[in-house]
Every structure is written in structure tokens, then in C-alpha cells.
Image (cartoon, rainbow, N blue to C red; front, side, top):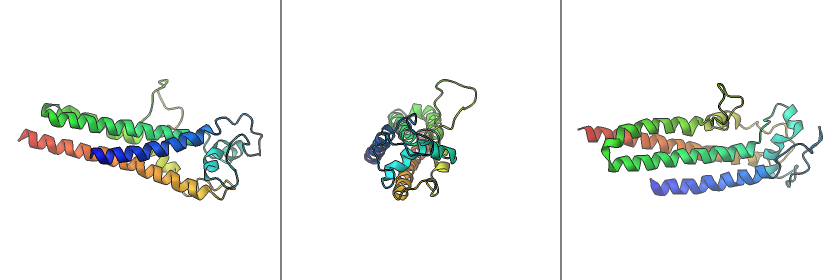
Length: 194
């Protein structure tokens, strides 16, 4: 399980780094004029698949009802949050398999980790109700769909969609790992109680 998690981490970090790099190419729309593509980005707006993600910050696509926040940076953040919960779940379960009396608290933590890996929401600053949709596996599952770049004139947007889809699959694999760890913890608890 540890070797698989290491491979999953490498894929997640690599793809997350690509998102971070893409998001860093066009951080602000302040110099963009209404009705024109964001010219400060290093991508060819007509053909590069990365430009599709950058264009989600363009005022033209914002007026068309597309995402206003920085999509690429949000995806990178989501991937890192997922990794943290997955690795914490793995380490906590490993610890409790060495000390069986810790299994009940490990199960409680793994239940929390399942929620964390699917719907992590940072309380920074704390508000009684969310003021924006955070980048979570649950929220991005709704957003990432085939028509997400239909408003853009870019031949590479199909590649961008597939990259987003594969990244989401990696995140769901992490969710599956945490659920598997929870199942192992339940089975270990049943064996320990006999």
C-alpha cells in the first residue's frame, strides 16, 4: 500500500505542479480589456491547452458565466489537500496496527479523513457560512465536464478537459485509498476484539 501511495503521490504532485505553473502564468486580469483575451499570459490563446485554464480568469469568459477564481491554482490546492489527508490516514493506520488499543481513535480519524479528502474546506478566515465554493473533490466533480470550455475558441481545450478529468481520477483514487484504510481499520478492530 505504501508503494502504491508513493506512486500516486508522484503523479499527484507532478500534475499539481503543472496546474500551479499554469496558474502562475496569468494571475491577474487587471491588464485585460473587456472583450479581449488576456495578453499577459505566455500561452497561445488559440491553440495551447493550458490557455483554456488561464482563460477562465478572462473577463470575457467571466461574463459568459464561467468560473471567476483561478481554476488552475484551485486544482493544485485541491490535490495537495487530498495528499495530506491520504498520507495522514496511512500513517495513523500504520501506527495503530502496531498499537491495537489505538484502533478506535484511528477509525474516528479515518472517518474524518474521508470527509476531509472529499470536501476539505479551509476556515481561513472563519465565517459562519462559506462565501465561495472551495476547490474540493466534490465541487470539482460537478464543475469538470465536457462542456466546461465550450465558450472558448481554442482547439486545445479538449486536451485541457482530459487533463482535468485525469487529475480528478487521481483524486478519487486517493479517496479510494482512504476508504480502503478505513476498511482495514474496521477489520483490524474486529480481529483485535476477538
